[in-house]
Amino acid sequence: MQWYELFNKENEPTEAQVSEYINSPLFGELDDYLRQAHKVKPKLAYSGCAMDKINEAELLMPLCSEYTQELFGKCETFQGGKYLGFELRDENVLQDMKGLIDVRVRVK
Image 1 (tube, rainbow, N blue to C red):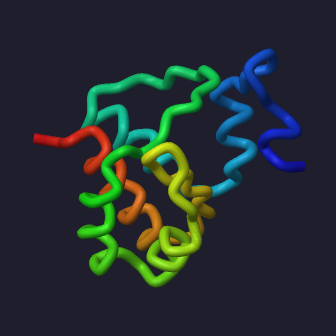
Image 2 (spheres, rainbow, N blue to C red):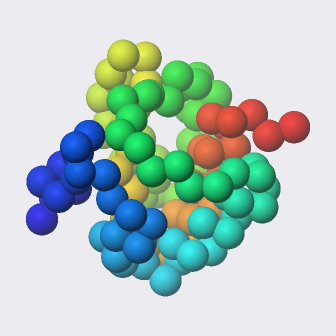
């Protein structure tokens, strides 16, 4: 099933359900990275926010994997951002995701 069919504003997922849906052994590493590098904890809530730092993300694209570049290129801009639906398939994609998250939260 698609994410939108399983979860919505009235039926938000648990951390375990998110992990189960992603179904990747790399998700734990990404979760640890976010908690340590950005000092954040999961906040499971419906969100309509967009990545508003398109120009910075575009500058990062040449350093990203072919998969991420293709995904980014196919995504249409919506309300000043892009919604990327990654398949966390390997270490390269994991590093791409970390880089894009860093752009979004502006690591200092």
